[in-house]
Image 1: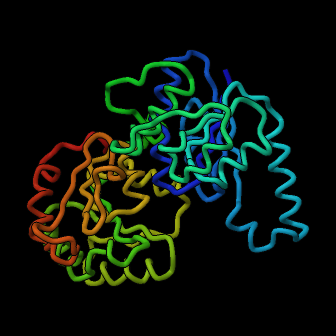
Image 2 (image 1 turned 180 degrees about the horizontal axis):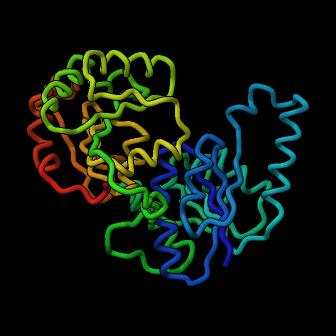
Image 3 (image 1 turned 90 degrees about the horizontal axis):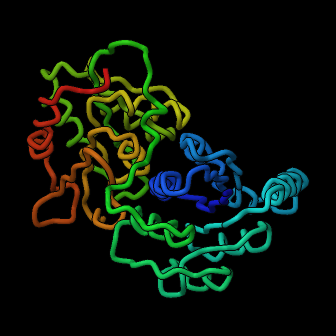
Length: 327
């Protein structure tokens, strides 16, 4: 059985789709997947053993020069890649009009998606051959698991979903000095933890014996990382890295402290202990999902600035005491 998945973005949404593949692979021996995904996240599906082919799409970039010769050539190559296979099922896990229209016009096979009441954009449901009712008041991972189960005809497991990608990053490189990773960068201003708070937490960890690694993805994030590390010889600002390289760093961490960001979801997918700092966002439906995921929020406030370093440090104590299984 061959299935096409359409889940193009964001990083968290793409990662949240992986447990559904694991369910399907266990329920239907021999099932294989192709996956349409935004080019910036194309590495992620390749980490799952049930995925044969990743088909990158670049709608965001193409819009800037839709009729230019290079973009027209890329669009043609994408269309040819999508139409090279006739699929037993096509699952639009994005639930948006643009994703539904994309698969309806170009891909061959029976198209599945959420019904009018369930889809993020109800009009998307009009493009599907099979429409499924998916309860909204559950975590995004569980919604996608339910969609796959109903589309492919098996019962959704009652057990917690398994991303099944952590093994991809297990290496035999030998022992390393223990380290933590601080994921300090996010897109929304109200999801940032103040730099003064990060530095206070770093100071509290000075005698822990841990190194602290700071990844970044944009120049302003690199500048922030350098400010956080200033004066601390046990804090390392990492170089610019590919997503896979960042994943390898996260996979080796004793624990991670993160704001609400895509890399926090990657940490969860890698089964690493992760303390996520939440302010205005609700972790109930889209927060960290998986093993070893912990939440830290300010009391009686939605302002992340009201969460002090001492409170975070107190919640880190069990993780500091735990023996790491990645060395």
